[in-house]
Image (tube, rainbow, N blue to C red):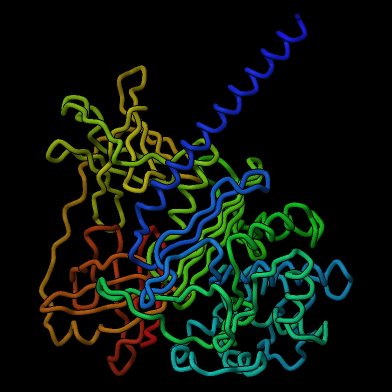
Amino acid sequence: MKSFRKIKILSTLGLCLLLTYSINAQNIEKQLDDIVSSMYSAEEPGISILAAKDGKVIYRKAFGKANLELDVPLKPENVFEIGSITKQFTAVAILMLEEQGKLKIEDEITKYIPDYPTKGKKITIHHLLNHTSGIKSYTGMANFMELTRQDMTPTELIDVFKNEPMDFNPGEEFRYNNSGYILLGHIIEVITKDTYENFIEKNIFDKVGMKDSYYGKMSQVIKNRASGYKQDKGSYLNADYLSLTLPYAAGSLMSTVDDLLKWQNAISANTLIKRTSLEKAIYGSKLNNGDDINYGYGWGKTNIQGAKGYAHSGGIFGYTTNGIFLEEENVYVIGLTNCSCKNVGEITTKVAATVIGKPIPDKKDAISLPEKELKKWVGAYEFDGGVIRHIQLKDGKLFSLREGGPTQEFEIYPMKDGSFIFDDGTISYNFSMTKDGKRQAIFKTSDESLLGKGIDKAPPAARKEISVGLDVLKTYIGTYELQPNFLIDITVEGNSIFATATGQPTFEIFAESETKFFLKVVPAEITFNKDKEGKVESLTLNQGGRKMPAKKVK
């Protein structure tokens, strides 16, 4: 009788645990549905997204349309161009060859491409892998858009950029560079005496069981291929044509969320390369002067709500992608979209944070506080390095302004836990008083937590706009490439000028001088640069303390 009772109790306990697990699963599914559907509607190009824990799927759905013209809904089985996530496969292929003794990362590239003009510089395979070679990135060259419809062999593609001047000496800077991965693909072919396509298919796809992954071709009929789109002034258009011979080992692979989980599981299990090789790829690297950079080989370090891991995104005509792996939590999230619009990284980051039980706060959950409470934190705060941030109260709301950059104020939202978050929820303030009654603030990002001490200092004066003639504004119209597959379109409507970055809304920019403009919605400046003849050849984006040049490509 006691045994029967014990069995009955255990059975009841097991049922309770099962019900609890089921309820938790339903709760997280609802949370993830809400996150993804907030950005991807049923009637637009969409997203296929998967989250896995300990190598097993816990969430797998698709939102939106695979084809707008045929009104076909997306499904998780759809095949997408994965863009620069391809670089992971290229990097692993190189590390496989190193383990086989067929190359060394420290080898100079002229060992495998003897006629490559290195301008007397020592350029190694390591420099190609971590974007520190200084070689000109062909996708940033002014004539790149003229090449997009041409089929080219790897050597023909190398001829496009090999004689360009170096951007910097090898190892001195990190600058994202597609040319380096073109050279890596060619080196794989030289060593293996096979095509890059065949090597990847035989040594990775077949070995891992990635049956729905391909070296992309525009002419090939691929089952479940999702059509690619772009967005222009609120309307969706078919993506521009791009011969997939051009992205090559830097971005030509196609896959599904299911196959990419197989890929990540193989990486985690050391199926393809040893752990020691993987660590070179995922833990970042260093410049010549010893400074750390987040990028290793085909992956960059990431930190989501204190959880560390590695990630990579992709952007190619008609598609954006992002994959994140959090090591200690053993969580993988992959998002594939069929539009070169919207920020898929924002979605995958929020999904990953929710899966690990540390959801990113949302401003819709902000609480109301009386002005008396808000006034306590108004004033200037000085952080390490002399960075000063001003907290101001306007119309019953708090705003943050960083001194020394574009004078744009950002609203910060009070939360139940006492913090004040910015719009995207990943950056926040925690205010408090010291024992002697002085203000202080902890400024938190995903990577760091900084203490700022209250000081007496007035906020900077507001910027003044000037009027620039329409004839001048029209000279700035065009497309500027900030990074490979990340463009800024400058347009003019009426007497106003606008900037639209890939995957972001259109914002009006305001003139401070004839060539210098600023944004009011984000802390950024744009300066237009002219050549000796006065023709606009590029712009420089000043944002977050970085000055980023963008050549005019169209």
